[in-house]
Length: 148
Image (cartoon, rainbow, N blue to C red; front, side, top):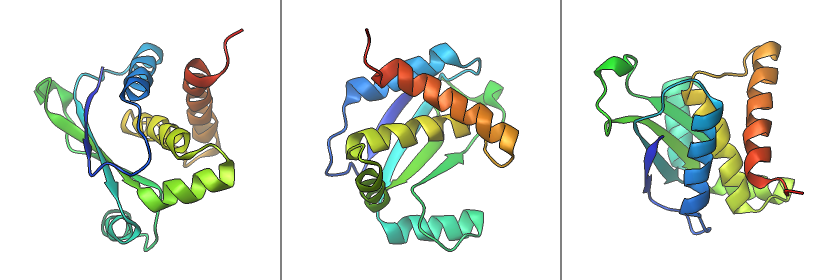
């Protein structure tokens, strides 16, 4: 299971138990190894825009960027930082207001989405989008749907 470190935490509440449950559920539902450290970094719009422009050639603010630092995981040690997820605080707040999820749940949705990206899911093609969205929904439902 991933271990994680939160860098520059946002003002909205983050529940460590839910974050760990997200990682645990992803570990249980995905076949890919997840034994390394992941940084969760929170930044402001200008910072993420600069990163997006530099690394994706998109001169715009985005909600989250995923960075993978190791491509041969056989060489990674258990506590190596192999990924960083960079979240834009303002975009999370804007999106939760649009979706009525609340900032905390909006972050959890983006966290699930981003972790799937670092496990090599993408949504560039329609079939890939459907597969990734199916996995996101499965994980979300496992964590947040009311149990009967």
